[in-house]
Image (cartoon, rainbow, N blue to C red; front, side, top):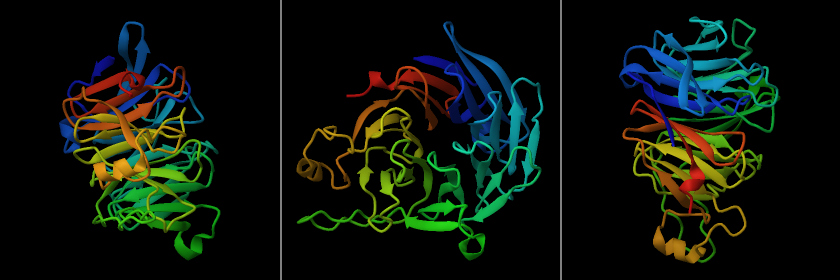
Length: 355
């Protein structure tokens, strides 16, 4: 396990470069993001450990980072002052572009993985904005009417994007639809809906709505998303069946789940980071033979488990909230990076903890 100390700055987000297997970006904030500066680190993985190739300071906290899909040296940051900034790591000090349209903290930025010429930002002001890096103003604004902690483009379509927010709903937007009717909103799914009961089983206990903090699209199954948040449960949904409730429910984390991300290598594996200071690897039970335990046994074990998924392992080396986690796209499947409020970035192989 490799480690880097972000001295004086508490980590909020970590992302592997889509171009280099040895380059990682970390968004961090002084004073836990409550007040003070932000800093984005560009870290290099070397035979001698992790080294800081570059860092940029910002006047306000940074809560997320995203690499450009079209330019290997550029990355985006999400700022506590409502700004979205684009940095070029071949230049020094200042961003090459900065946009200031959001009225509250920006908590997520995400680059379009298919078209590669647009990106989005989501904010506590209840909006998602679509941008082009060469344009000075946003291309579109999508209202969610609630504090939006996470938004992302689908990896399977250039025009479909999703968000989760404080009102416990998963929203799907399709930019091909007319804007006039509902601002491109095509689906609005309540995350806290209990799973449909199995044949002969009692109906699931309803869960009260709670803030959804994170979500991610499956990289292989284009209608599957995972969500997680304050109620500590990871859920997977199929947007083809919006009224069916979750297809898998994965309990285990002891506090809110701050980040969830599907594996780029395996269709059933996901990774989570939580305020309980652990990062955990899960299977959603969709791959052949991975459930291990019979479903009947699982029902007796934990009434919240649904869908045959399970925790496969955990990494507990963080000593404060684990806030960010990401998979390496290259090389041997299983390498990932995590960051947290303990001012540390850890790079580790999740195969070492999987059972």
